[in-house]
Image (cartoon, rainbow, N blue to C red; front, side, top):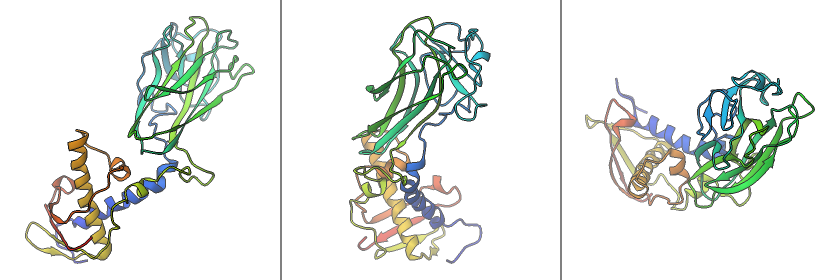
Length: 311
C-alpha cells in the first residue's frame, strides 16, 4: 500500500475495527463480564445498599483478606483466606434486617438470545451459626435461584461453596445482576462472597451453548459482504489511497458501524458499544453512498470514503 508522509491511513484503523468484531465472537465465551468479581480492586465495580466500613451492625460490609481482621469483626469470625488464592480480597458481610437491600449488584451488557452462567463462591464467617445466610440471585428483578450457606466457617469444618445459575437473555441487551440476603436475623447471618463471574454458558470446548446464536451470526442477516464494490478513499488533500481487497471490507464495515451507531442514537437514545453493534438483532442494509470519516477515530486527518456498486 502506498504511504504518505505524516499521515495515518484510514484502513489501518478500519481493519482494527473489523478484527475487533471478528474477535468478539471468538473470545466472548471466555470473558467474565463482572469487572471486579474477585474484589482485588477493592470496593469498586459494583453497587450495594449495604454500608461500607465497620461491620459490627447489620447491613454492613467490608473488603478484606480475613473476616477476623476487618473493622467491627466479632470474636468467632473466620481467620481464613479468600477463595481465589487464600491471600486476596473478599466481600465480608453482616446480613441486613431488610431482605430488599441488594448485597451486591452490577449491570452488564449482554447479547440477545444467549445463555449465560452466573457463578459465585460463598462461605459463612461465623465459626458455628444457628441462623444461616439465605441468598437469592435476581437478574433484571426476576429471581433466578437461591442458595443457603454452610453452617461452619472454612477454618472450623466448613468450606467455600460454589453456587451457579443459568439465565437466557431473550431480547435483553443488559443484565442487572443482584444478590439479596433473605435472612433478616440480627444474630449470626454473616458471610463472605468471592469470585463472582457472569459469562456466556459454554460446552466442554468453550463454544456458545447450542441454540444461542453467536454475535457474528446475528449480525449477518443482510447479504454477504463482497469486494465487488468500488471503494475510494481520499485524504484531505484529495490524494487517493490504494486499497487491498481485504481493506475494502474493513472500510465497508466501518461504514456499517456508523449507520448502526445512528440507529442506536435514534432508537435507544444512547451510544452503543461495539459489542452491542455487532451482536444487535438489527443488521445494516449496507447502503451505497458517501461517508465522511469520523475525525474522532483519527485526530490527524479527515478522510472521504466513496462506495459505489453492489456490496
